Image 1 (tube, helix red, strand yellow):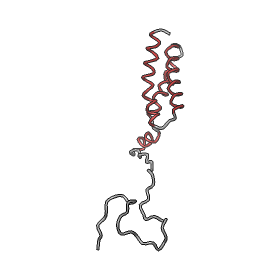
Image 2 (image 1 turned 135 degrees about the vertical axis):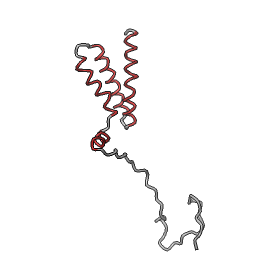
Image 3 (image 1 turned 45 degrees about the vertical axis):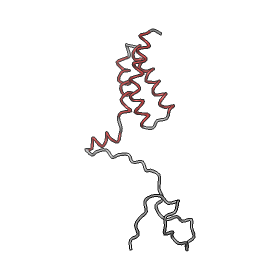
Image 4 (image 1 turned 90 degrees about the vertical axis):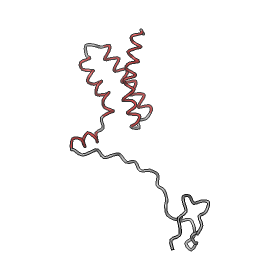
Length: 125
């Protein structure tokens, strides 16, 4: 392998890092990311070496490169004229009410205990 081939592989690898990073942020698994990265490098080398079918292979390579940057939901919302709705992921559920572990006739403590957290509230009489 000559110096020119190594430079070509390095240049393609640097270009492929951008969509691979986008897929990483989208939550793809490590195996799928590695397969995508290596497949795009191999496809890029194939396009560089085979000049005759390049006019058919370059559009496929461009689509494979640009696809991670395109989101279907945002594209449809842009066509319809609405802003895209954000993806909301619910956080952990926090219990804010009194505990159900005590007996039904147990009294509420008047002073905060070591188990409670947060600021004390003033009594309103």
